[in-house]
Length: 81
Image 1 (tube, rainbow, N blue to C red):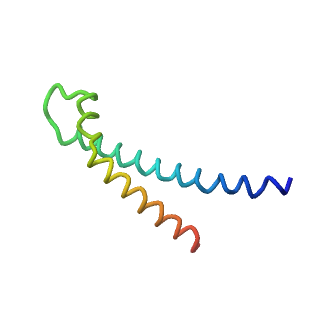
Image 2 (tube, one colour):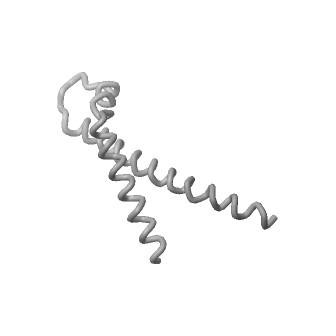
């Protein structure tokens, strides 16, 4: 039983990082999507058009940088507390 413990903990850390980064990216894109519908008042704005408008290379770069900064910040706070 003790032999499997270190192997399991090596999988937990990257898994937790992946989940936290994916959550931050999800929140970023949902915020963009909500903003896309609240700032536009044009009739005929569809979900497909809004998704096409927000999924760009620049937005993905911003999301990744924000997610990594958020992950490092939360890990630092988690270890200090």
